[in-house]
Image (cartoon, rainbow, N blue to C red):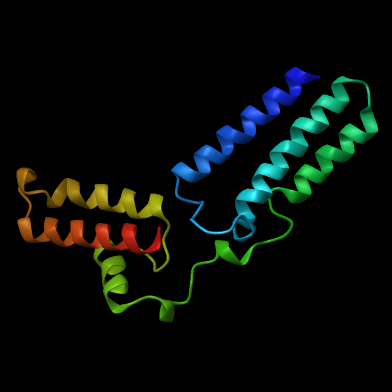
Length: 152
């Protein structure tokens, strides 16, 4: 039993560390971090469900697994859609941010991974060492820096 508890705590800490590294956990009170808390709770319920089923308590284990699915915060499966996953209205962005999204060829409100991917793809052709323009490379770097500092 203590091994299962240790594995559950380790798995939750790994998940939380990954969320922090990806920038999904901002500074501030924990109750504002609803998506991350849903993910940690869901992971804990899954581990509890498997542990209960391994000990022979089939129905409570299945109930815990069902609760984990309901609480799940993944993008692929969510019974309760959260308003934070939708991009903000264009009016919430400054003209510089809108221009930066246009420079990278992205839709307004694109996430961190998309911004970095678009920047890398465009820099392959725009880098001065590859025959590109130094001005274009500066514009792409400025757009990337603005979007990564402001929104993520």
